[in-house]
Length: 551
Image (tube, rainbow, N blue to C red; front, side):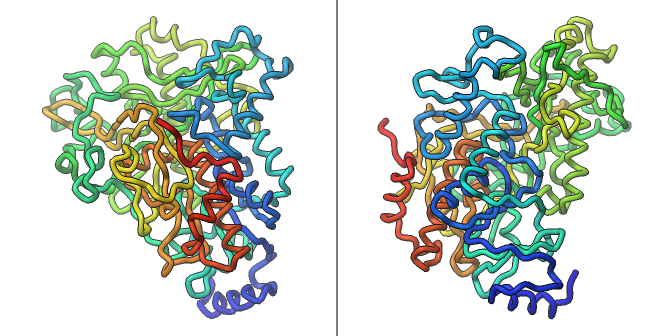
């Protein structure tokens, strides 16, 4: 860590546009976007199309985040909310699959063309809602390149990564010493990594229902979704508490129903599997495999579970988007937080190490289902055809680049999106984007209830496809904290409201709007908090954004 004096000198040099030799290379930009996920790309492209110098910092060296890391079965809720760059992205993907050469492992006529509530490749809208990761990444690459976005590979220095003067960020610093000077900053990281060093308030975990008059927040108690059957014993030796609890099982639910806590919903990788022999890499038992980690799987099977161990949602070319499904599945429940820590406060290397444990859990799960003698032969045969897709993630052993960080930090601004806004019980007067997907939280922990193992945390509240507005104030920090930062992902929302807002298409939409607001603030010399909504609304509509829908 550098002495305070060196940091202050660097700040002064940066504020006048000079280069500090002590800080390595310095790059100048109008708009700096941190985070290479789908929202980061759309924010950067929008700002560049508005003639701003844009730097996009890519932490993974691959653009698109989850959208190009296996989440090819789009969670949307209502396709009519798409507009602007989000609609353009899905249209470009659709056009890709109109070309015969795109169909390498199956014929176009063999593809079932089913998505979530709409055709996967919809001829009416000419948009695709299911797609291969490599196709999504290629589209994002093309959009960024055509717009003239400067992409820099690197990761934020989490200790000294934000340089401020007063309540304005003047630059960010990457781990390799690169300093990127900017006028406006957009935090498009899944973790909300710019916020802590920028002095922006945030929360992690679940609010009590009483805090915002909600019904689906906090500790859920034992719900029916993705739940164990009754009678599954929690102890290492059946019925013998003295032998201790199985790995990952807590002795109690740890609070009353509806109460707030520090827990995070589980993460997983969205595996891309294929049954095409010529494109398949069979999964081997991972190093360090311990069958005791899968004892709950064995007991769930013994209790009658016969399928649904992970989803096989079809995407083109005989591949899948394989998400969590069932009581024991790809979610590594309870492994993204602990006593005094959670994913958001880990440094980059610690996150990578934990992500590798998630990877090995999932590889071990698939290997176990396909090979272990305690798994009935009928189940082993049913899952035997599936392996990793050889033509995906070719520089990462065919494994997705991004762990699905479903939730980490969430900003606290003067406006907090709650489930009452999502259910349209409360109005949003300044919408910059729309959501419509189910209020969706995955499990947070495994617990002992009445002597049996149960999961806790899952919420699935269907909104009927009714779209709701997302407030501009929810992506704007308190002015006293920072007046030139916008946060379109880790925005100001409760845990359960974020469960709907966090969907990738909404991330793209909200991020495009953030970029429009950032450019307006630059052009008019105002803080992001002082951007007039009436002006912003006109600009967003001009960019094709959808801000309201008729019922």
